[in-house]
Length: 176
Image (cartoon, rainbow, N blue to C red; front, top):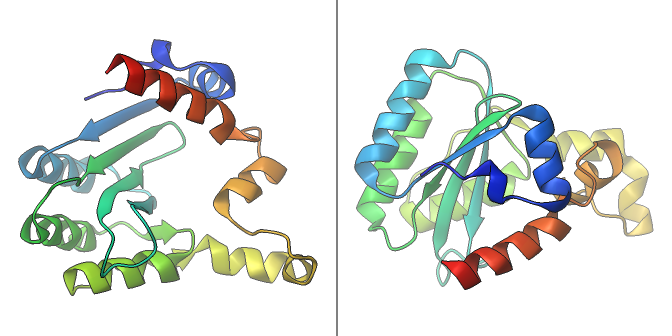
């Protein structure tokens, strides 16, 4: 399912339109594997990984999905809600098989959750959270966040992208 860019509004809608961004969601194993095969065939650059979970404890919470940034304007989301662990393992193994270098933000959490949830490791080559600690060592002493959201707010044009995203999600849920 491709997200209809015209339905996005506010800051996130402006950014998506300005950069002609495309987001595609896959909801089943078969289409997800096909998308990952296409990434292997066509995407030669580094990719970004991010997982979404229902909480912080892999023993009690669910893996909701895996986001994969392909370049500055294209990304996919594999919606794993309700999937069996066996199907999630197949997707994670396929992601691990991709020849692309992989970047995550807070790789420690993503890898720990996936490992605890599935028994296999999510392989990553770089972690921007670790780099942020090196670049901004004083932030931890002033109780300042190095979250991806906070870094985007401070250092990119995306700013507080979640503000309008939260509004969009509420409206989308009402309609759908």
